Length: 308
Image 1: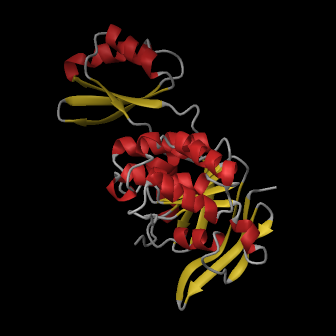
Image 2: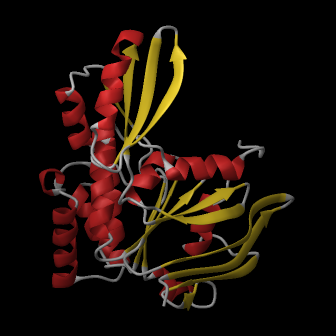
């Protein structure tokens, strides 16, 4: 049974369409990303899922429980971190977690154990006695996630969790989400394609309240890309080097720029290809980012459509 099941979900705000006829599932221990530009319906879906909004049409279930009919029990299975999660800046980290744990019905040894486990998981030990209002954005985000994990939820929901984080904090959060997925399912929203491609198992692409597709992320087997540049005098050496490359490499000559020719290579093992090219005496070799399948899919699906 899916941890999350969304069936034919629609919700309007007056004449404005929030979401319309959206259906998808989140399986156990899976990370699913809701991807789309601002205003595409991502936050509306999360608010319905977590009980902040009523669906207009359709049905949403968490761990088999209807979020309307069995709302209290469904919410007990969810850990929620909204965008810009509200925290009590005048409280210390451990005080805040104690308060949130009690709201969840924890007490005594169970509460103390849950706080210790969350602090260990989120590396909050060094700031456990610090005032929340004095923490960095990265630590505040960790505190918000820690409170969402206290009651061992079946589903962790995060709305735009990388907003305001620096590059190092984004990388740390990415690894954290993969680790958390060993214990629960994760539903996360973003409008950043590259982040979704790195962290999610599947991505539901939304635009203007409609679900365009649900795409499984393929991380294995994607070829790296290299570019070779050479003047006319070096063309024979390039041809010889290309002929000597390991099997599985594909090369395409690109349009010349003045007297400089270039070739784009798709290589399954870039280290071996780079070593072969260096041995052939080719110094002008550039490593390129691989083409993003998710990026290409998103551009194809949204071609000719207004993205606000």
